[in-house]
Picture 1 (cartoon, rainbow, N blue to C red):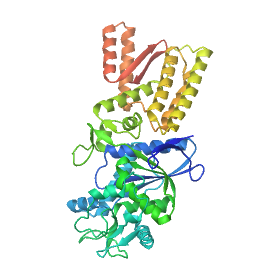
Picture 2: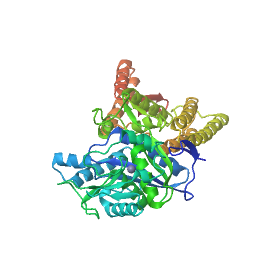
Picture 3: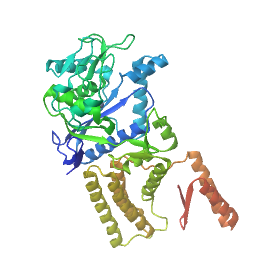
Picture 4: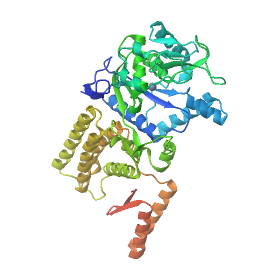
Length: 465
Ligand SMILES: [Zn+2]
């Protein structure tokens, strides 16, 4: 039985879907106006891991991620670059989709965009006005009326009276109450806009997710996800809109990931400490970013530093050691030791499932995998053959695959391989001639190239280390 920590109820709950075997999951995506950064990667990875695990447990997952392609930031950047805002956002949508693929993140089942959902957004707003949950202001704005929603604040645990103290009506806003939020914004001169019953304008941010949920997944969904910086006001407002519109409970489980922190600070444009996914992938592999996420609780902050990245890389290397072939001189394990390895593989699988069932506890799941790594490596040291290692290794491959790790061995080019083979031939020749100094020299040269060699009676095996 899978248990999930639900932000809405503030406790771990048994996971039960609306429809047996099917999961409807909506995760808030990105506003596309600039290069995506590793904080975006973290959130996308968290929900990719959750999705992969739910699929492993037999669910069919419908995973929707939106692109906010109409927004102040996009309009401002497009103006600065002298570019059409929708062309600019389309460019970043394509770039982001490629980056997610490079991170081995499964493509969402649907990726709706605001600019392509406009009729439904307008219909949704009209419905809210009809239900007196929203009102049109004389200037062409439309606002959601927060005081009319008795349940407002239930996700974030905030009370309207407390929130009101800090809120005020800004110049140019035509709302009745400081907490009311815009569903539709009247167009400013020269701005991209759409026709609506309230004149030319564009939607506020929150309404898009309510409309896209309805369009892609229906009135009720199983999982709604995003970073914990979205709990208030974005997700609070989404609940208010959706439940006022349908009269039904909206999402059953609200899952929020912690924030990525750089040197103890939140990564942000204003602090100028942004690391783009593109730059990260130039330096480290996709598995390193994923391992960083896996090593901590998804709900906790992720400390992004050279030290934590090095640690992630080390952990990956440790996993990879277990996937290596048997040593050339292996004489085979006794039946008893071989069956101990098989039962370790089975208990690792059980421990892995138990850990992941408990609110996707990836650090504990990894700990289970390291037990298997240890058992495989010990078996190899004790002379296990490839055939004896293989079942445990395929369990390890299966479970690391559930987490989305690829564990590729570092590959050299074919040119490099030819060079390595030539050096090994030369070294074997040198050894035959008892030219030990030359033989050692070549061994050092190979080591420098990142090659590990292993001599046995059958010849010399090598691999990238
Ligand atoms: Zn959203």
